Image (cartoon, rainbow, N blue to C red; front, top):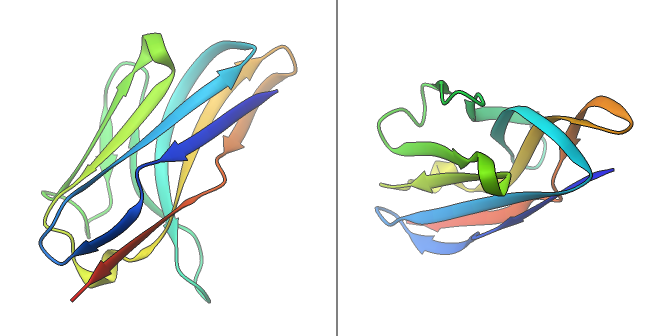
Length: 119
C-alpha cells in the first residue's frame, strides 16, 4: 500500500503564505501525476493543481499566479506554495498521487490538512 501524509496547513491572515508538503511512503514502484485538491463543507472536492513526473503543471483558474506546485521525485514528495492567500482559499487540502505499487496502479489520497485564511 501507499500512504500519503500532508503537512503545513494552519491559520494565516489574508495576503499571507503557507507551504504544504505531501510525502508518499510504502512500496512504491513509480508515481505519475501528483496533485492537490481542496474541499469545503457542502461542496465537492475541487482541483487546485497537478504536476506530472516530468514536471508539467496545471492549475485551477482561481489559484493561477498565486500558488506553485512542485515535486521532488527522489523523495516522492509534492509541495504547494500558496501566496497571496484569500479567505476563499479556506478549505481542507488533500494530496493525491497516481502511483504504482505491488498491488498495481492506483489512486491514493492523503488524510487532508486544514488551511484557514482570516480576513
